[in-house]
Amino acid sequence: QVQLVESGGGTVPAGGSLRLSCAASVRTFMIATMAWFRQAPGKEREFVAAISRSDGNANYADSVKGRFTISRDNAKNTVTLQMNSLKPEDTAVYHCAARAYGSVYDIRATEYSYWGQGTQVTVSS
Image (cartoon, rainbow, N blue to C red; front, side, top):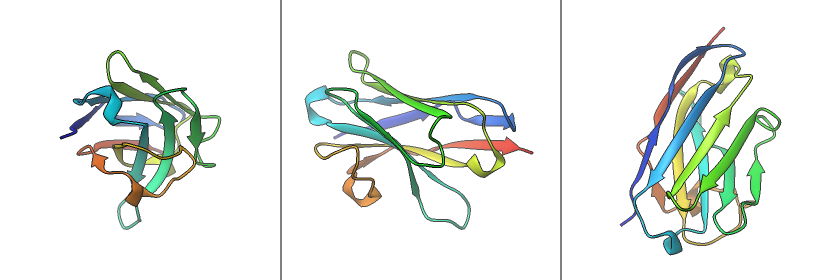
């Protein structure tokens, strides 16, 4: 069983930065891709960024390109989302997700088998 635990959420003013981390309690061979999704109140869960565990190839939603950076540390089984130049529209619960196979370019949430409980990110205007 894969367990994902997020940390690092909080409240920041617009233009600020936050760093989210996700720790996976699983043997690394079980995961091919890790990602971040977010869900704002009254909205559907949306893709933010994904990274391949093997080669570090990453994919980003257009709304966060140039502001967010996803990275991974295979030795520690962690994935990090560095969020800069935050906007009020980035406010959401951010979830870490993992899957055993598949491309970073497949952004469907339904293709991810493992999910963390989520961490709240609030950006004040």
